[in-house]
Amino acid sequence: MPETWMVASGATCFCILLIVSIILIAVSYSTLEPNQVGLDCNGNTKTIDSSQLYKGGRYFLGLGHSFIKFPTNVQETDLSLVARSRDGMSVQLSCSFQWQLVSEASSIFDLYSFFEEEYPKAFEKIAKDEIRNVAARFSSFQFFYNRSDITRAMGTGLTESIDKLGASVSGFQLLNYNLPASFAAAIQATQETGQQITRVTEEQTKTRINAEQQVATARQDAEILVVQATAAGDAFVLEKTAERDAILVTLDNERAIYKNMKTTLNLTTEQLLTLIWLSSIQSTDAPQMLNVPAPNGVFASASASN
Image (cartoon, rainbow, N blue to C red; front, side, top):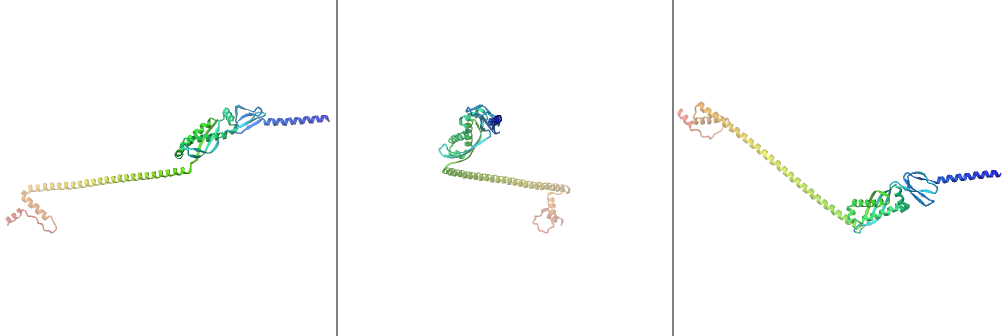
């Protein structure tokens, strides 16, 4: 009986030791997700191993050890704050920026040493301070007309501030800004006046261009008329020149014929003129009365024949 009791007691102790060992071994393992890195924190000595940065996976760290975990993916922080412009005007700003921790053991260790696990809140506070500082460099009017410059300056200042803390800023957006209603109304009126001036200027330019086009068209029409008139005049001159040349040719031919006739028939000048006159009278078919003085030689020839 005593031996049975001793065997049972030994088996029970062995099972207890086995279970405790399994539990101790199990709790000695720590796990990191694929998008996480971690530092080994020794809970027994309250120290952190800064020499090694663990990446995603399952690790045997030992009893009393655990991971201080940090995300490796891009994080986004939204900001809503009130700043003041260079001329003292209150400006309500809505911003957003994206950041990512630098996966280096020393950088992660320094970040944890400064802020422990409250580094996102620290980034937010630092970002607000930097944005306020940048906003104070610009006037109220510049918030309306130079938004891109302000956004670029805020992003640059924020990047420089966060980079010093072991994180990199991949993007910054100035989502919205609001100035006091009275100032916004004055800016709106100024913009409307500027737009009206622009419209009037454009109308003047359009009218001037139309007038210039009309003048150019009138000049072209005048040049066309001049060319057409010149062409018509040249054609008229050519036509009349041709008619003149034809008449001259006809007269030259008639002169040659009459000269040949005078020589062949042995006519005097008076007789030739008489012959030409009689030929002119005979060549007409229409009955008409001609008041043409007869050559003296005609009647003299008639009297001689009688």
